[in-house]
Amino acid sequence: MSDSSQPLLERVARVLCGAAHSANAEGRETSAGEHVDRHWREHLNQAQAVLHTMREPDQAMAAAGDEQVWKRMVEAAITQKADA
Image 1: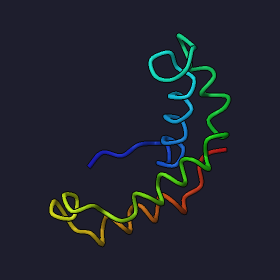
Image 2: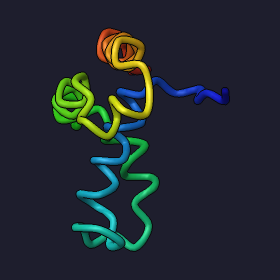
Image 3: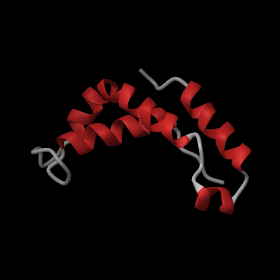
């Protein structure tokens, strides 16, 4: 299994920040990368909310794998600190 060098909380915060500022999503910036690098931490609360929602797998997810493993993995992501 591959893994990322960035904690999931940070990756989600970066995606939320990018979505808010990139012209490819809801924003106006044609290149939001530098903005995201500077401001992703402002989206950590939103990222935490997303992860809290993800703790409980839906029916399709539960049918695809082990629910308890999923819950433990998401809990680990919630408690892991993002690189600040």
